[in-house]
View 1 (spheres, protein in one colour):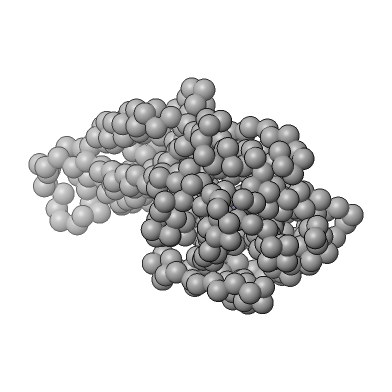
View 2 (cartoon, helix red, strand yellow; view 1 turned 45 degrees about the horizontal axis):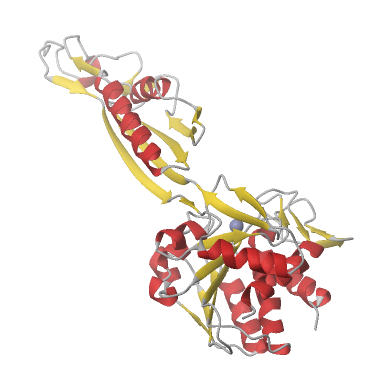
Length: 392
Ligand SMILES: [Zn+2]
């Protein structure tokens, strides 16, 4: 039987309406479990939710081989970014599905989930021969792939390749993605009244000194950096005692991330150290008679929390995941295109856990925006690519 377009579209519309921002995926997880049961699969849920403080875990479907073929791992995430205040109201407009413009659509990544469900139905209906399969619907991808990071690699140990549906075009093969490192910078100074600056250290000023010495934007052909968040202060006449910033570095080469990270940390440390005082002035804010003029050295301090959100990978055309995916794309009558992603996905986790994993598309466009769109025909093409990649 061919792909059932109405059934695929219907599943997407129903699933998109169930809100599932990261860590609040319970209702969506229950819907998936019910669908899988109805199709005739035994699904389990792991404890990823409990481990990361979320409501639901990764949903895992293990499917024994029906023929001699590759052991394949297939995954999409079912959490989304925050949707906005209103309920998601998907609407079909020709080949496209859109929200009402007030919320996201959740095409990222419920397109991928709907494609996986339709493929699972076809495997049964058409008795498509396949090797051992593992289908995983993951949680918390939008918060640094934390659900995938909690998935026990034992589940896919010994598998030949992984395919992640989390991209637009079904004939694209994402062959590389960067490492992303986040720096959470907290500066501590000494707070006080702005008109009594003696013995005080302005944390906002110290942070500003450090930030002014950090680069912004593109660092080289592989690497970018960005200052995303700066917070400090409460009132114009108050010397802020703390200041906070978040800064990211991402690169397609791990050695460049390491190089820039070391440089960045040294720059911040040196700048903050300049903000120090030998207190010799009179400080009436401390009370007393104002004669204690020989205070010890005081200085601003900084604490930088460094978090690697995900690590880079780069496939060549011979890597197992690329070979499997290309076979699926060509068998579906399409021409494979190779692309490089500028962000991460669950595939970064699996690749760095030793499973060759490639990402391809499932018809989602404008992810994370109010203009998000799902293409029905591209979802259909994605089901064909996936089914052909799986066929033994
Ligand atoms: Zn996604």
